Length: 164
Image (cartoon, rainbow, N blue to C red; front, side, top):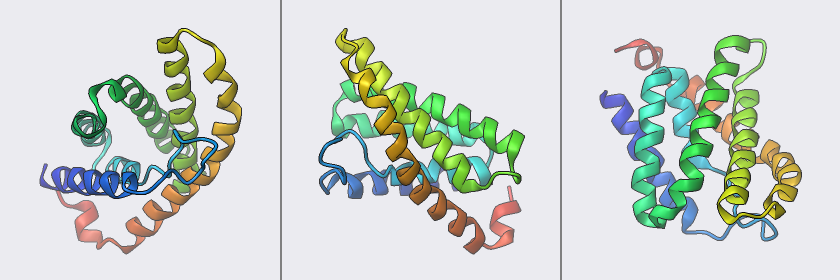
């Protein structure tokens, strides 16, 4: 549980740092690198599904205090579906597909679900038109996050990866 709390802390710090800067894509302000999500993926790989789920939920609630509770309508469902997809891809296809591919899948799903939630809440289908370019850009953001996790796992001592 201590390792999960540390990863949650890192995720929250990464969230704050990332939100201190303007979005990397001016034409898509909702699309960010999602560096804090690297810690959720790292938790999935190192600690398993349940700790990753708890980190995701705690991160969503705590960051909503910073961004406004309304943001949870977008971040929590997107995060939950994204984590489910990453867990499925990781469990069923790893090592045939690498951590970067797992991250890209999670990023693409996160952005698609976020835009679908926005369309549902706003009552207009207009946000759905942004799904294809958002998913395309997600390959870039997901790859950045995936490489960060890949190199983190390689750098972590084996004792840390295997201990309870």
